[in-house]
Image 1 (tube, rainbow, N blue to C red):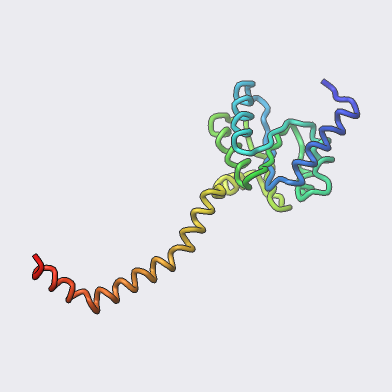
Image 2: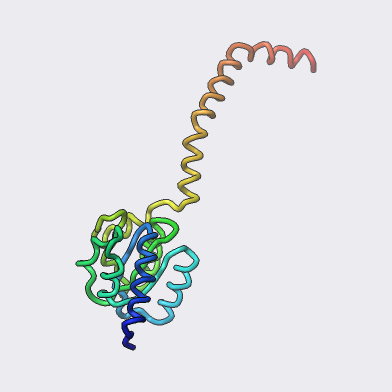
Length: 174
């Protein structure tokens, strides 16, 4: 169904708004994907903070102008599905990679992060990025480790200096 000019302008404005706030973009070829597979992918995208849209490449090219995803303009050819990560940089990569396992028709074509264009193979790198919770847990572990090492060192020194007296007193009390 063809869109009239005002509908096209709305689509471009909507996509431009998402692109200006998104962390990453994965454009994937979806020809041959069934309706059920697309519905499942859209549901999973909503749950994981990924904006998923199928639009004409000319509209997508206009929408990314002025954003960090402008580098992908020339690579947008063929029927593409656009996945913008709105919450976590790796979310779109994980979504496309997960659904590509069960569907050989879905293939990543373009990956863009922080104004850089990457080949489709980088979808694996993007998918391997930690989630926000995982990154915070890693940071907490790194911050807590020096304190834990200091506590172990103090305990070792205390055990070395006074550990024998405590051990000798324990049998006498029993």
